[in-house]
Length: 319
Image (tube, rainbow, N blue to C red; front, side):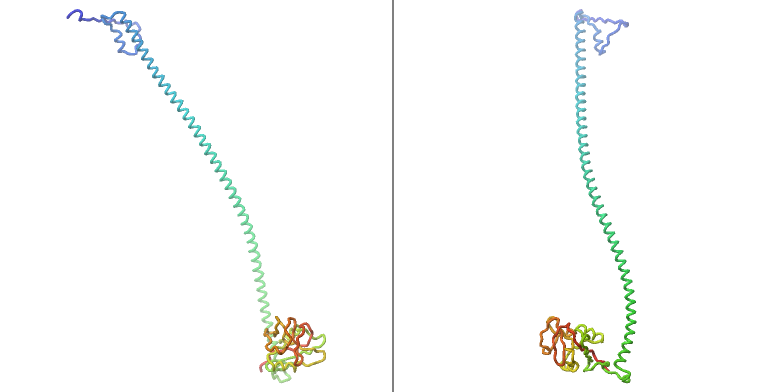
């Protein structure tokens, strides 16, 4: 080989005791320690400056990236804090609104409960009053029932006493009838009419020829006939009318005898409610408050309040 084809390199070994600079890259340090045989001192110095600039550039880029990352992180952190703050404010406002709504609903419910309570208390009060009234009514009804039961017992006792009295009266009446219709002085031979009464067909008559203060108006005469178990005379036929003139004699102090005919509703009616069949028996028109008297064969309309004698009649006894 030619000499120019051969290149030599010198290797300089550092003293182990000298401090070596800390290199960030082992591989680059190795190349830095190797010197080419043909390298000049100026080229070695330039290489060292170039390496320092590259290292600085590398570090600068590294720190730029680190700063960029830190800045990005800070921005993200700030945005996160802002987002969390906004969320917290929004959430707090939402909770506050819900709390207000809940408070309003609670107030409405409280008002409704108070209203319902007042209504319920009013109803309860009214029901208590009604219950008290019903109790009082029930008490009064119970008392009335007791009183009615007492009255019922008294009435039963009265009925029993009246029945007993009636039975006694019936016996007495029967005895009286026997004595009146079947007199002892007639050897107990029974007659159709009692003593003092005049028989005609199936009836018995008695005329009361009272005079002066003993005379009676129409109602009083009817009451006297009832006490004699009879009534004022009711004329059913012309034959009976003719008979009346025989028991209505014209006596001094007597203007007429009451019979059972009077005006009611502008009509002549007998005491049994029957209307006068023969209007020829009395020509005077019926005027309420007027009653009829007979004297012999003459019938006359006079005031029912006038005092007169009277004629009673009742059914005869069948013998």
